Image (cartoon, helix red, strand yellow):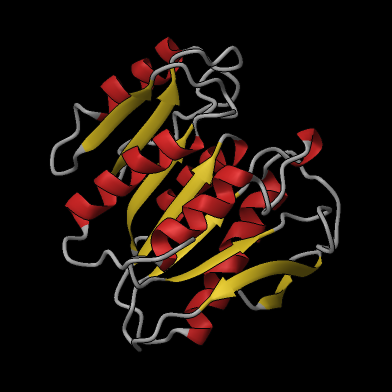
Length: 220
């Protein structure tokens, strides 16, 4: 899990990067929860998401938003963090010029940032949004949502009601040409405390359906 430093709008950004073994492997960018509430690239959900893609042959990058860990800059209420995510994708593409596709996966605040990046980068062909804060941030920019993907939520989430995500998903499902799926993890709170294994089971099943034949055995 090599440590990497790459340039962002406000200085250096710190990440962890696992290159794939094939030149044309797809890229995955993993985005962490809210920086002002303890979110980092080492969050257990983010860490496990990272390995869901590593285990399927992706070149995978997770990183700290500005002002987190050794990433320079300071919290910018989403605008700067979107710039950081774009810089991360730019860097990953620069070291993987033959990459055939890209996925975005985000958790909570990171899901909001990830969906904005999705709208700006047509090469992103799939997404995973976990505990998307549909009641806390405006998701109306998803008009239309350009890629198929998965929303996952916990039914005991006290931060974002399941109904808020359901409303967003139902709106996105009306669009032609894309498939939006939603899964609910029973008993899971916003942070998936004690439910990470169940969450990763849902994510893994979805990825195996979208990316058949890519799963590799791993102890991660």
